[in-house]
Length: 316
Image (tube, rainbow, N blue to C red; front, side, top):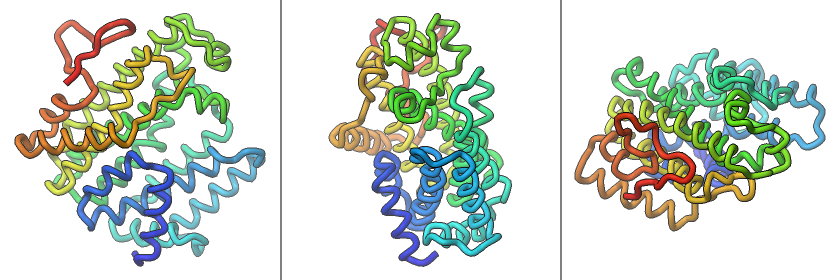
């Protein structure tokens, strides 16, 4: 990969993925450059459907098919990021199927804006999040990728679920999308119209609490696999998990109300998360122990599923 192509990816990541970019800065050079390119490729495809405005669905689909062909080497790329992505895919042996899964998920966003069950949402995340975890694992080159991969998939899903729960307001206002499964909403008596109208209620808070707990189970499964990554990649991935999960603390602090205001991590809060994680990592190189000590994900207690609306959230 040429430096100018890497820089193009880096600029996209700095502009659109500030939280992940902060964690990426701690990766070793050999992985950091590839991560800039991967993230930029994901973002370019994502923006085809997220920033489509009045672009007709068939044109969005056609553009994604162009990106697929360029990413897989079928045609010459028209973007420096895609030039670098072709090189990266070949160097690290990223399977065509992973690229296909990702692009297919982006195409799903063109005409799907509601999910009936969590299993339906999980199928979508197989491309939009799990494929990302698979590709990130490939560029880190762990000694035992088969052991690391299932955990990487869960961590990718955890990050995406956090984004969904953080961005409920933005998704419904800007894109008419609701990623909270309908079965969850129904179980708490929440009508879709309530979310569309940005009407906060105790029933919506309970639905959010359920989805936060489900997502925190994904974090626990994902973080359990960090030990299988190369030593120089473990802290950066742990930092990413701590930073993303910190949104859960904000969501709970504002009473699960993500309809009135989207929770956002300040730079000061991000740097505090980084500092305390690095400090604990200095003394204890066990990713699960450090994550339990510093993250916003509550420790599991026997017989208790985690905090719900109105319950005190432990602080560390």
